[in-house]
Image 1 (cartoon, rainbow, N blue to C red):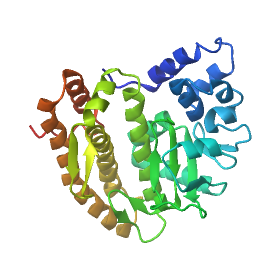
Image 2: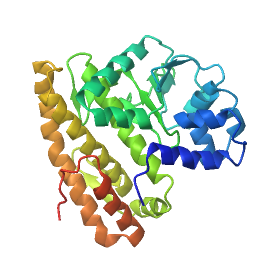
Image 3: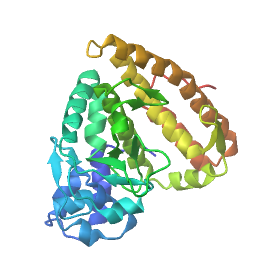
Length: 310
């Protein structure tokens, strides 16, 4: 098992695409950008014809979609597939058609690139589409999400306006913060990076099944997470803590932002340590395949300075 590069993941999708179209078909050009709806169609082996009708359908599942290009990344600012939205675990949310929000994405990406070349590169490689969401007034959600990446729609990240203020775990800036959006963009890109490798490895299927039998108590939420969710959280926190260290040393944030961010950084440190200790504690109780996934995590995690607990 290895951490796949973007080129290797594109190659995996291209192999799936070869079952449907010869290499001179335009979809073979689009796949280089990892368009979410086309990637989803290839993984699920369904609706590939729809996903290859146009660039818009390849990204958003709708031929009438409006996409703003941000130099390789795209923002949905128009029609988005209602059927697709309804099939995802984001009940009570609707896609927004607000072109002005794309400026927040542009400025947040600029800040992210100034804070960390690695974080920016991860985002450029693994996130292809941003979609802004709002609560459905006719069917409001129990909780409005901040941001989310959904494995069944690879390389697409969803955001609500809460992403302009809220960062993990439960820190909310006093007003809209460009840093908050930059961190949330990177947060979801880390999920996308991890998913891209896990989805194409047979060991992870065993790990996913065994995760259901190895649940971990998460004290700060008073819930139990399956082991694969613990692995995802540890991967993301590992990367975020590095970004936060860079931000705290940067002159690009105001003092009041740094004070707030320092609190989030300090609170997250023991939480990451707990997640790592739970992964290690699970090793005696899982199969060789699952042990391999955990060892792979330690070898490839974004923050190599974080030490094992055993």
